[in-house]
Length: 259
Image (cartoon, rainbow, N blue to C red; front, side, top):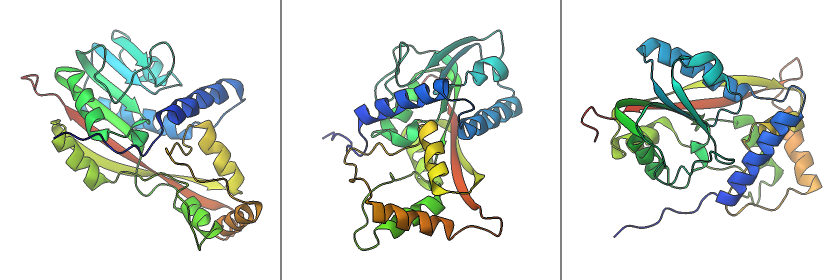
């Protein structure tokens, strides 16, 4: 008997968070976008390595437009989509258009309640032999911030940062979803900060904030001060804290038989 996946994340909060991100990216001078830029650069290298030159493409989550402008063949028919807007896609449901030679997903999958289902829908959106590359922040991301948040309320810690997928779990999910030639790997992106507040601002500008279905109440002023002090306790001799974003990459194909 089929059961619905647990509602760890709030769909309405995900969409509101995405709208805020798009607004900040459009309205702020030089907004942070280094996580997405890193994903685009990495995806470009992977496509070049496998010499995959698709003709019909779907790109989901690239608010910079770099995939279409700099990475994909100019002869390709490129469809751009996101969680919100005119061309919104619901990753938890079958896609309205299929038959793509390539689907690239930048971010977004880390806050899907039914990740196995989303991976199945991605495979079904491909033409036979088509390829998917999906990237998002995975397990091991933001260790300094997680430690600081825990220090803010050590006696009764609340869930303020959502759970993340690791490489082993991702590999098992790809097999369950029926991807052909599945590959899972990760790499670390490091950034140095002079304050926790600047890190929080960067996360908000890039849509990496908390979208849990049952969010914890805001930290008290005392708790926030504790978190800031714990964060800066990790600073090096230059007064900067090195934070890590562990980028998880899932890639695979649909079989030539179309299964």
